[in-house]
Length: 422
Image 1 (cartoon, rainbow, N blue to C red):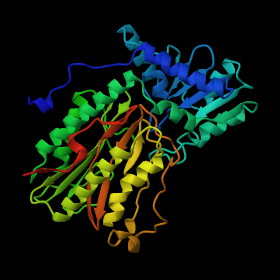
Image 2 (image 1 turned 90 degrees about the vertical axis):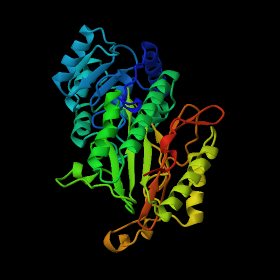
Image 3 (image 1 turned 90 degrees about the horizontal axis):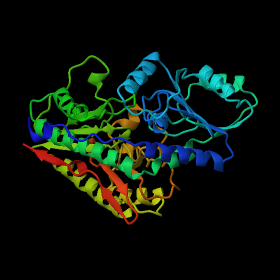
Image 4 (image 1 turned 45 degrees about the vertical axis):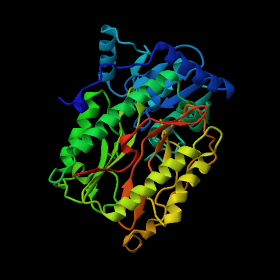
């Protein structure tokens, strides 16, 4: 087994000290807003906000009273049995009161049980912008049941405040982030090894995902995408899931002159890195080289601009400048916040320059910057993913970047420029 296919020996985990830190911060947020309770919806949300509280299985709802025991509502008895088995094995569990009932009925029952029928209660998950979740992710039926059966409760939307709280990382959390980034580097190295003329996209995909699973990381948790994004071709501007994972069709076979591009999403212990890996097979098209050069310029400018005290819009403007000067367009964000993915640069900027696009599709304009006025803080994480397009040619590079008290630290190396193989 090669060095790029060996698993890590250390498997870092979060301590009870980190649990106490998180719970204290959430309760301090509640106190400062006059709240007696917080409902944190996880459900099918991409960011696992329930997991932030529980450090356990996701897909549920957590009820956090200002005092007393927290309640984790899950969707299936398998989670209770798994929780019990973990207890038998001596595995650390942050919450002991775990129940089936991740729905409106379960929330109402818990709040009544705790005497909170007339309380001021914060809610996370209703009005929230996230990737694929532009209008939150709590089902109408769930929320409507809660409102109808707790008519005297005053609910307060706390999603954005919670996002800001979660975005600032502790030293323990950064250990997990670095582990996720390192797993991603192994996946990127494997992609370089495997990507050759005559290899199927599915073979490359499987080799990279094997690295993630081998080292305790999962892929993209969003059900509307796929564990990894991967596309190939000499001039393929598309992104998102490869269609052979969604409908019955043959994966593409990689050819000479192709560019194979992937977005790798290693998530370890709830902490996710993202890597935009671009591998070109010789001979490399001059337009692709040009795209790669400008993408690297955008990446470097972004590193200089990202500092504590700067606004997000200032960083976005800096990263856009090399593209604007070259007359390039871009499809996906140049930069977004990471863990959680909540603040995001524009998307589809200049897409009308993609040949045939406006003739075929209705288009109301590019997506605006989300969180433009957010001030950059130390110990926050940002995904750099400059993508540069000329016509149908597109190159996407980048990785995760940590803001420190004095500057930035890139946690990835391989994906930060286009790599070339024979």
